[in-house]
Image 1 (spheres, rainbow, N blue to C red):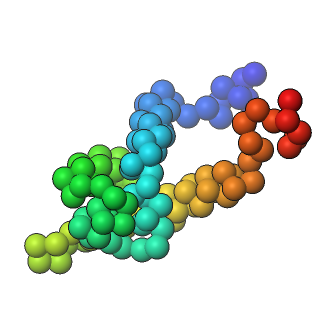
Image 2: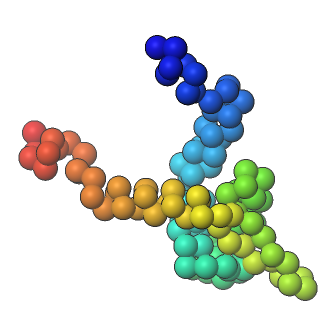
Image 3: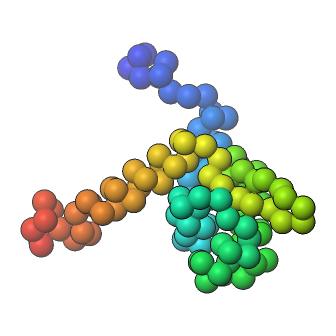
Length: 113
Protein backbone atom coordinates (compact mmCIF):
# COMPACT_ATOMS: atom_id res chain seq x y z
CA UNK A 1 0.00 0.00 0.00
CA UNK A 2 2.87 2.39 0.76
CA UNK A 3 4.26 1.94 -2.76
CA UNK A 4 0.89 2.85 -4.26
CA UNK A 5 0.63 5.94 -2.04
CA UNK A 6 4.17 6.96 -2.95
CA UNK A 7 3.35 6.77 -6.67
CA UNK A 8 0.23 8.94 -6.41
CA UNK A 9 0.66 12.54 -7.59
CA UNK A 10 0.02 15.30 -5.07
CA UNK A 11 -3.50 16.68 -4.58
CA UNK A 12 -2.84 19.81 -6.67
CA UNK A 13 -1.68 17.74 -9.66
CA UNK A 14 -4.77 15.53 -9.40
CA UNK A 15 -7.02 18.62 -9.27
CA UNK A 16 -5.36 20.08 -12.38
CA UNK A 17 -5.65 16.76 -14.22
CA UNK A 18 -9.31 16.53 -13.26
CA UNK A 19 -9.89 20.03 -14.62
CA UNK A 20 -8.21 19.08 -17.89
CA UNK A 21 -10.35 15.96 -18.26
CA UNK A 22 -13.39 18.10 -17.43
CA UNK A 23 -12.52 20.37 -20.35
CA UNK A 24 -12.19 17.35 -22.62
CA UNK A 25 -15.56 16.01 -21.49
CA UNK A 26 -17.40 18.78 -23.36
CA UNK A 27 -18.37 17.58 -26.86
CA UNK A 28 -17.98 20.98 -28.55
CA UNK A 29 -14.47 21.50 -27.13
CA UNK A 30 -13.54 17.93 -27.99
CA UNK A 31 -14.74 18.49 -31.57
CA UNK A 32 -12.40 21.50 -31.82
CA UNK A 33 -9.47 19.47 -30.55
CA UNK A 34 -10.17 16.65 -32.99
CA UNK A 35 -10.26 19.22 -35.82
CA UNK A 36 -6.85 20.45 -34.67
CA UNK A 37 -5.41 16.96 -35.15
CA UNK A 38 -5.15 17.98 -38.83
CA UNK A 39 -2.99 20.98 -37.91
CA UNK A 40 -3.11 24.65 -37.07
CA UNK A 41 -6.35 26.54 -37.74
CA UNK A 42 -7.76 30.02 -37.16
CA UNK A 43 -10.95 30.63 -35.17
CA UNK A 44 -13.10 31.27 -38.25
CA UNK A 45 -12.00 28.03 -39.92
CA UNK A 46 -12.51 26.03 -36.72
CA UNK A 47 -16.00 27.53 -36.32
CA UNK A 48 -16.87 26.64 -39.89
CA UNK A 49 -15.45 23.11 -39.70
CA UNK A 50 -17.16 22.32 -36.40
CA UNK A 51 -20.47 24.10 -37.01
CA UNK A 52 -20.04 26.45 -34.06
CA UNK A 53 -20.14 30.22 -33.66
CA UNK A 54 -16.86 32.12 -33.74
CA UNK A 55 -17.54 33.57 -30.29
CA UNK A 56 -18.21 30.10 -28.88
CA UNK A 57 -15.03 28.76 -30.46
CA UNK A 58 -13.02 31.71 -29.09
CA UNK A 59 -14.39 31.11 -25.60
CA UNK A 60 -13.60 27.38 -25.77
CA UNK A 61 -10.09 28.05 -27.05
CA UNK A 62 -9.45 30.52 -24.21
CA UNK A 63 -10.31 27.80 -21.69
CA UNK A 64 -8.22 25.19 -23.50
CA UNK A 65 -5.28 27.57 -23.76
CA UNK A 66 -5.47 28.43 -20.05
CA UNK A 67 -5.10 24.72 -19.29
CA UNK A 68 -2.24 24.31 -21.79
CA UNK A 69 -4.22 22.01 -24.09
CA UNK A 70 -3.86 24.31 -27.12
CA UNK A 71 -1.27 26.90 -28.08
CA UNK A 72 -1.66 30.03 -30.20
CA UNK A 73 0.44 31.76 -32.86
CA UNK A 74 -0.46 35.28 -33.87
CA UNK A 75 0.00 36.58 -37.39
CA UNK A 76 -1.17 40.17 -37.70
CA UNK A 77 -4.75 40.31 -36.44
CA UNK A 78 -5.34 36.58 -36.79
CA UNK A 79 -4.68 33.89 -34.22
CA UNK A 80 -3.87 30.34 -35.27
CA UNK A 81 -4.42 27.53 -32.80
CA UNK A 82 -2.78 24.13 -32.57
CA UNK A 83 -2.60 21.31 -30.06
CA UNK A 84 -0.19 22.31 -27.31
CA UNK A 85 2.13 19.32 -27.62
CA UNK A 86 2.54 15.69 -28.59
CA UNK A 87 0.98 14.55 -25.30
CA UNK A 88 -2.35 16.15 -26.17
CA UNK A 89 -2.22 14.58 -29.64
CA UNK A 90 -1.42 11.18 -28.11
CA UNK A 91 -4.28 11.49 -25.61
CA UNK A 92 -6.75 12.29 -28.41
CA UNK A 93 -5.38 9.59 -30.70
CA UNK A 94 -5.67 7.00 -27.91
CA UNK A 95 -9.20 8.11 -27.01
CA UNK A 96 -10.29 7.86 -30.65
CA UNK A 97 -8.66 4.43 -31.02
CA UNK A 98 -10.28 3.26 -27.79
CA UNK A 99 -13.68 4.44 -29.02
CA UNK A 100 -13.22 2.65 -32.34
CA UNK A 101 -12.36 -0.64 -30.62
CA UNK A 102 -14.50 -0.43 -27.49
CA UNK A 103 -17.25 -2.93 -26.91
CA UNK A 104 -20.67 -1.27 -27.34
CA UNK A 105 -22.50 -0.38 -24.14
CA UNK A 106 -24.80 -3.09 -22.90
CA UNK A 107 -22.67 -5.93 -24.19
CA UNK A 108 -20.02 -8.11 -22.64
CA UNK A 109 -17.25 -9.30 -24.94
CA UNK A 110 -19.37 -8.32 -27.93
CA UNK A 111 -22.36 -10.52 -26.89
CA UNK A 112 -25.61 -8.70 -26.16
CA UNK A 113 -26.78 -9.38 -22.61
